Image (tube, rainbow, N blue to C red):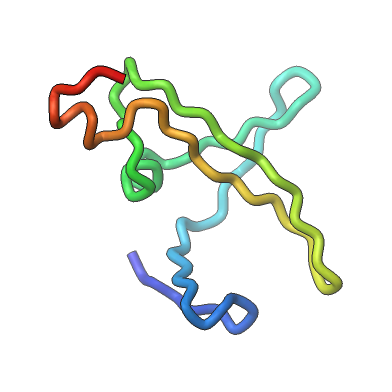
Amino acid sequence: MTRVNLDNAKSNDTVIPFGTKRVPRYNYSRVLTLDKKLLQICGCDVSPEAEIEIKIELVKTSDESYIKLTPVCTSPATEKDSGAKP
């Protein structure tokens, strides 16, 4: 995994590329899958019983538009490790 600092990112931002993903059709929508490793880096519990929600935002600047996905982990890995219940 290579870390990259992009020119258009803030100087203190670190971007870790996870490659390009195919976005297949599902009924009348599109489906995007996220790597478990990516969610773990964000502090999410990726066990099968864990609930993970994603906050979705459309960001528009004068130069570009992009989709920002932010995981909202209701059962962080730290709580699972400590034995605490959510």
